[in-house]
Length: 419
Image (cartoon, rainbow, N blue to C red; front, side):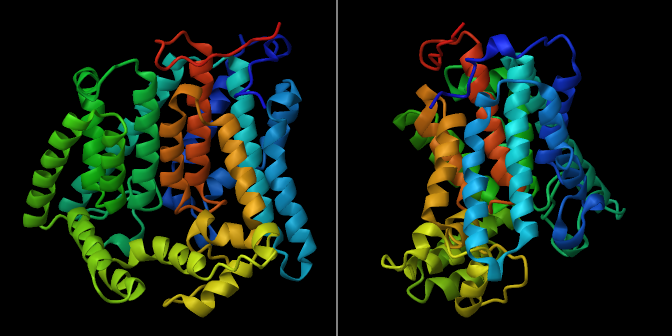
């Protein structure tokens, strides 16, 4: 199967019209952000949902070779067949949202091919997004300290001093988006080291650090550490770890929320008692992401054919309602793709998702790094969660621009363009 395809360049048509470029960046913006004022039932992003309803029309009008996006449809088709085979638990809205996200992903790929997206265009957009998240977070902090209404902050965060969501639904959502953005930016920046990157893009890095610490997200600290470790030599890794140890110690001294949550999670893992109970007591938010995964794999039955083919949607919610130490409500997706998703749609569906990522998202000479970044987001996200399609879309665009732009030998993608 071809890499993010450029083989149909002859059939793409004229790229002089900026319309498709504007649409591409608009959909990336909507996919990456979530304004509290646009939330609907269950915290759904009504602004994004409205835009996704128009995607079939854009795909019809964009006029590209269908072979470019054809492989993405294997996943939703299999999900549809699995859901139909278990019609007693069929949930049309869940399946509809899955189709909408996949079609939006296909449209983003189609747009990149249509406009021949270049690295400088993508880098500029990534920088705009990071600065936007940092600016909104700064507005939230200033508003809070002045006793003013906090922009785009859900009411249930008010009691937490260092818990701000910026342009996301919650701090961890923001942290994961920023992690993907800065990884893609660094991969395309043509800098050979993190130090060189910092000297060149110091304000961008400072903005990322401000978001990680200022949002109060434990996820942000872990992901930032992973980003550093992916791009350092062993000696430099030791130095950075020492620096981070000092920074976290100071953060604990001043009782910064993110650092306190890191300590609580580590204490729960090292505790001799029950992992589930200890982690839930130490950090309930983090526990909701990892306890379902632990529970699901502890109860995995290798002889159950449903685990491979799928049990139908809503099966996972019923399963976890018997095991988890907290209540599960209608529409919940406990643990995301690595627990609920494969229970509902089977390990085959999980393999199809991985195959889609391998085809469209993983650059040839950065494949293992892309895989680590992808897994960091996927393991705790559901199939109908924006974070999942943020990492899929941004990695796909990174792979595409690498295939189009001349790059240094260590990051150049070998692409055959068939005339």
